[in-house]
Length: 205
Image 1: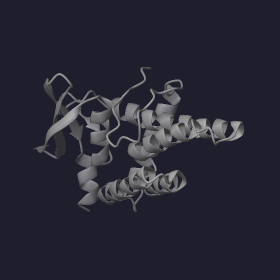
Image 2: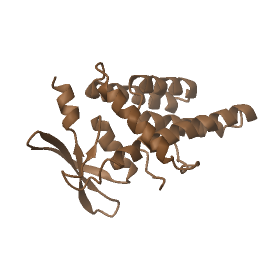
Image 3: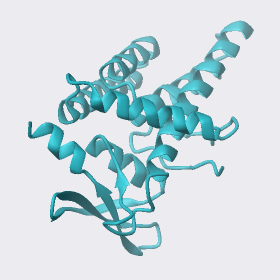
Image 4: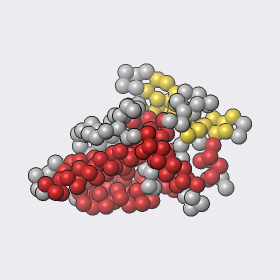
């Protein structure tokens, strides 16, 4: 299975490529199950989850830029507590643990533990993205990707090395889609379809 690369939208520092093995098919399947189990919880609000995710990861970034690594990690973990399958929070934690492990101030044992945390969160982020990509190919309404939050749409775009130019909703019968017009680094544009029918139905109850 191919390991995905992307330019982190909230850059912590220069990022190393994924250092471990790509997630296994079992890991991808397990993370997909976690996503939909979370979504099906009566108390889970997809829109509130991404609002909290954005607020806490921005606080995390601010703390990191102030040089307060431990507080930044704690804040990012709070984001995961609120939204356990957040690709953004997992990837931010992975990148922070990677950079902390490089510090000459940490012991050999601490470095090994930090590197393990890096691998775990990086694998989770990749497995979640791959589970979304396995739901379709995003090229039409019939093969749209299925997402549990709007933020998953943007993570798919960033992981694909694209940028969003425009987002527009589209309804066919009882199905609702988000269509994202995206652009690659060479300026070529295309559209990606996301099925948000279950998401919209849940929030309209």
